[in-house]
Image (cartoon, rainbow, N blue to C red):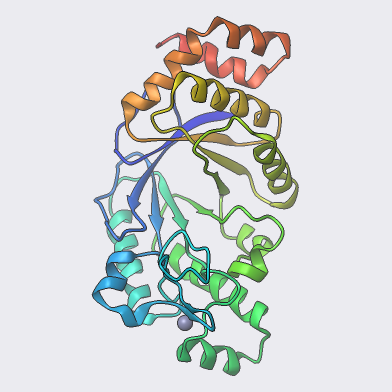
Length: 294
Ligand SMILES: [Zn+2]
């Protein structure tokens, strides 16, 4: 199992591999490619684009896919996934990234906002013409988008997902078995302010590993933690390392934040004894490797 980073700064940190760099954010900011890294691109969540042209927002019978619409519980503002001009802009950005020497591209938020979306006139017309059910049309739409988007990328191709292993198709149009044909791995983000309670991480990881037909990479939030939070995070990484994972990725603010985690693990004798006692072989290898540097 590898231990890598998801980061907002394109800095390589010793002891971590792979590096995933957030090159386009849900607020609409887009950055130049991070060379030698997996570049992570937010697709249909773009608050800036929606501010500039509110007509592109995805809609439902419960109103627009905006955070301020409290009839829903959305973390981001969503553009309609069939908007042709917006899609073209995404493809153009992927083309720019893929001219550079990058490892590959990960797409996130490339799906419908939730089960009631999108009921805009264009989506309604496209679905009627397809003759498919609501669920099937939405899943086909997302898979077809990913197929097209992939032709604008190079290297390792991966997708994130909303971490719902059961209702992803019905809610978001995410068809895991169809998407497995397109990707090199699945990137499962399990974000939290802390991991003092971690049974849900272990459970969701187990479900995804059993469900997905491609390797699984799990992301955990690791920004500016306290020593207590760091201890809980490292134990959570240890528990999920018992499943068959390609990598665990730690989401950090910057390289200093990443070094702090490795240093804490190496110099925490209680934690290292705990790894030995309960035979966390894969995690022990990671910490032993960090010890060479930290
Ligand atoms: Zn629509």
